[in-house]
Amino acid sequence: MIYNIGIIREFPSKGITFEKLHFKGVQICIKAALELGVKRFILMSANGAKQNGTGYQSSKWKAEEELKTSGLDWTIFRPSLIFGDPGGQGRSEFCTQLRDEMLSMPLPAPLFYEGIFPFNADSFSMSPIHVTNVAEYFVKSITMEKSIGKIYNLGGPETVHWKKIIDCIAMASGKRKWRMPVPVMAIKMIAHLFDRFEWFPITRDQLTMLMQGNAVSEQYFTEFNIMPKSFSAENLGYLKA
Image 1 (cartoon, rainbow, N blue to C red):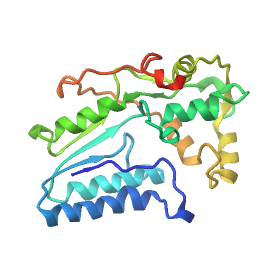
Image 2 (image 1 turned 135 degrees about the vertical axis):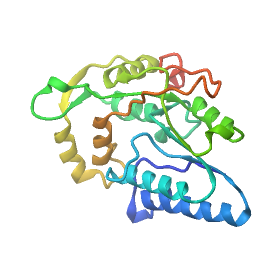
Image 3 (image 1 turned 30 degrees about the vertical axis):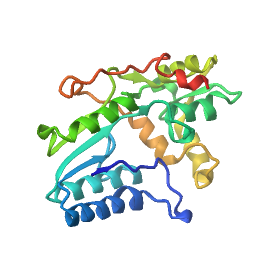
């Protein structure tokens, strides 16, 4: 059984919550697997999952803990930022969303920073991994016994700073974009008022996780015999659509 249901923001008024989809959904599937005699269970978690994190991070962590004590033959994957052709589901894909909601605006792209002075602007980094590489990890782990009982933090072949992410997306989209330092606290204050509305592009928790970074230090491409795809304008070609 593979569980890869995930959302990046919740809307409690619609019954869409991290608790329900990230944790309770896993509980239900674990129970079903045990009742049906399905021993193999592969979970899509997230890099940065932790007990005392944002609602997103803590719900992913709770699901991991539930699975680890289930008695099933489990493997947990924790991807960093996933990019790749969303196949018509544009808003759920990070790079497409940035193109549509940030690069298309007649304003400079923000280089977020903590505090009062912009000395640490663009100090956080990520390890973007292509969606096809993530899929390969999942498929190959199904019959890979040595992956049972292990947690893998998945990242792409390079770690990049926020500025390079913006530049690559702009280049792939055929756009030119100015950048400027922006205090993240100011955006969080605005998000406090509006992030309950679906039209508002980002939440306070998303900003918190963005500033924490999402880099991965270990690589498992050789272990799984996977050819990594880099985060480049070429592999972001779908953004031209």
